[in-house]
Image (cartoon, rainbow, N blue to C red; front, side):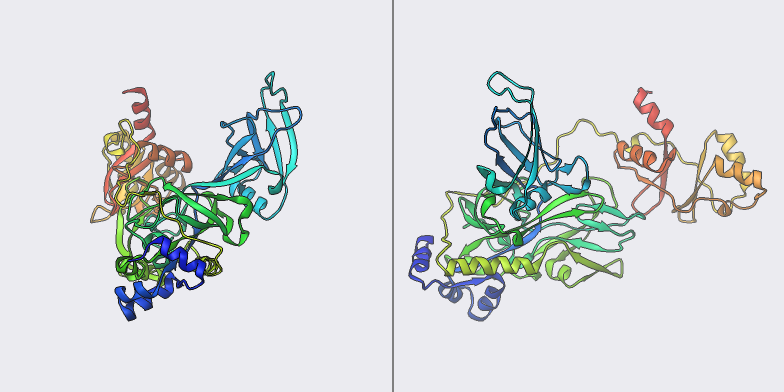
Length: 493
């Protein structure tokens, strides 16, 4: 047994044994956990990935005359001002009012760290003690009194991987997902990531000293949505001490702005149990591939995989090999772990004893919502036809049933197309009185029966259509939802 005090004494004496997480695996395999715990004092870990739940508290100092900032923008990115007269919090995902997704809060933060000036603009309603109502000036990081990075949710233990079963390319926070299981993306650094090396939170807790974007930082609590083994941390650090090498603003196409944040955490090897934790390998770390092609909160799990499978670059889905791409940098994470190791060896970084432990078990609850109206409670019965149905017969069905849409199905009731009254009218006008398969639309926009009604409404608006076939996850036809169904819902009919 060792204590953090014992390890800090070794750091002061210059005889501490510090290795990175990737080196620890082989040592434990060779010596076993008990002997490894005697040989090694500290294992350094690292992660570098997109951490949207990040931001910075800023204090600008008082102007002359003084202003109580009601609204504030930095390079046209709005910051939150409901704190005090000249304090603000800028979140990394906030978008520029003028440049949209090309620039956001993450870029402002990186610009400041890189020593660039940014334009500060503020408006106010004016008071007797804060009479000024407007100010525009240029500021740099050194002009600020305080710049404290405070991130509500960082250092994810692991993530769900993502894929897409739908027929459309999807732009998501997990990157661009190609249609029909065209690719898989994943995040996290697996076996060298901090929380995987201390899964019971024995040494990582409130007050743990960490490396945050190259600066000394601290864990200040569990992160939001903390739910081990999908644990997270809330962290803070001084922006003025940070290194741009370990932070990077980024744009997820079609989704928005984020910030790649580098975090390194020392894991003190207090006993053989901690040595065993620090020997974890990617083959032992499981996660799930979920289907973003299903637009629901509880997305279906395609399969369970290990980080070793994900890092191999290919995963099999439905008998096909699917290309896998990482969204976190293993290379930069390794540099962070090495940087932390060197600081400990150089006696410039000491370990801290947590003042309070972080829960090792906690359940993440979804949002409490009022009754969610789903498609199956609103949809109408569908009147299906086959691709070999005559156009004349289809036109008679439309008139007889008083409908405008006829879904086309195959022998197994799988949706393969749709015909509208407009398609029929056009066919008659041009003399194309043949089979439905010659005039049907083959690429059909659909909705699932358990999808919220709002999903159907958004799809109709986006694609400028008046009806959607309702299917199950295997494209079997279940019903039809139309703009008329939605109108009845809104009117209470």
